[in-house]
Image (cartoon, rainbow, N blue to C red; front, top):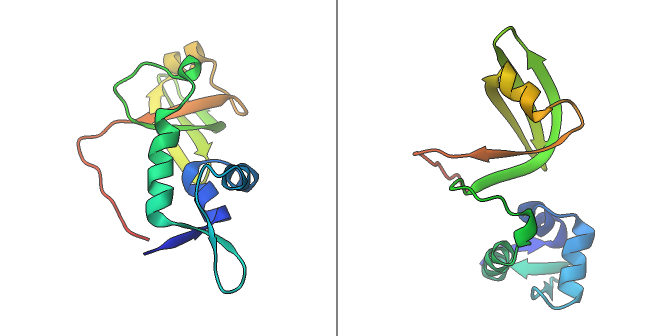
Length: 130
């Protein structure tokens, strides 16, 4: 079974390593040590914890949408055309680029440094194993 370091688990959960470490210290997710003394989380435990974490999200910040793939991040670039616009968001390790209307960008107040969430909905999802 694959195991993950605290840093790897944090990246997969979209939190800082300090947050993942605090969760492990509090017993929210089980860890064990490898032969070098590093704390590891078994893949099955991390998967179960990530599902639990997603279900226990703060309802006040949850938007109501059918889109399940949400990538909260920060706007890193906005390119405006006469009618269309391109917006880049850095969401953790993910760079997302969206093409939308200039009007939508202006209405949403999107500019570099603004917090935004990219939501992806697709009929085809491809999964690669690392």
